[in-house]
Length: 359
Image 1 (cartoon, rainbow, N blue to C red):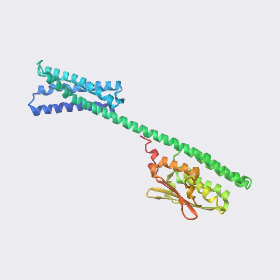
Image 2 (image 1 turned 180 degrees about the vertical axis):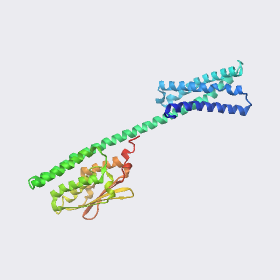
Image 3 (image 1 turned 180 degrees about the horizontal axis):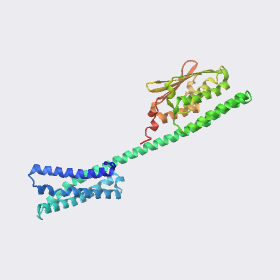
Image 4 (image 1 turned 90 degrees about the vertical axis):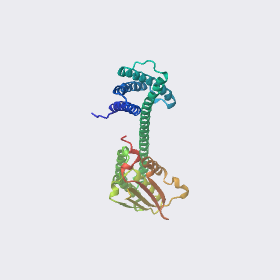
């Protein structure tokens, strides 16, 4: 059993707070005069009364839903409650002094009553300030956590939608490739269907995963390149250079494949003589850098839509997963080549989307 659970902590704070108030009053009394033991302990019942009345006050606060009120609505209620509680505490104090000290003087000036009332308002107001501040802070943190959870759920939904959208896009392009082979080379078409089934199996299995290892993604990239190699034959020359440590880094599924597809579709395929595609990846300063250099040239006047749907999807997924910690650029690398470069955190723990999953 935990000693400092929420309930026990409340009672410890209650009793400690009123004991401290009683001790402070006693110290003030000692500095003014030399009190007798009866004078010191005459005010001790105030501790019990303070715990009792503020506890009842707490129950009343919750029964009336004051925790949810705004400050302008809450303030007058707290002030009235403070006066009422202070009045009852004052009665307890005077009765205890009469009983313990034997002081039955009923001609106490009204000014003493008023001064005693306002003196007791201070601890009650302080109690209210601490109690409501605690709940306001807790409610603020809970709202913040709920907002983060909602934001995470929204991002998950958006990412799932983007991954699902990639499947028909990829399937459409692959089927177009196979259609061109059916009459020309039926055997190659059958092999292409086998490779496509592998790709579709991968695409269907990874829809629930925000990231996969680069090594897993490369298997899909190679199967896609096999399909394109059948279609383009010697027009497509591929070089892959991946460092060993980069193979285990997490990447969004189908993202590298999309970039490779974009390079072939918009760069190499339109060229009569085809071209080269160089895929490389390494780690620098805990950042995974993926580079794809392919034959072709960007059209500056149409640069924003050069890659079409696939690159737009890539940029949106990167923004959702990594925020500002992912960098994607597409530029002319030389007079005959285009560079697509992607830099993302090399570890999955840095991904923004899943930082708050266990809150």
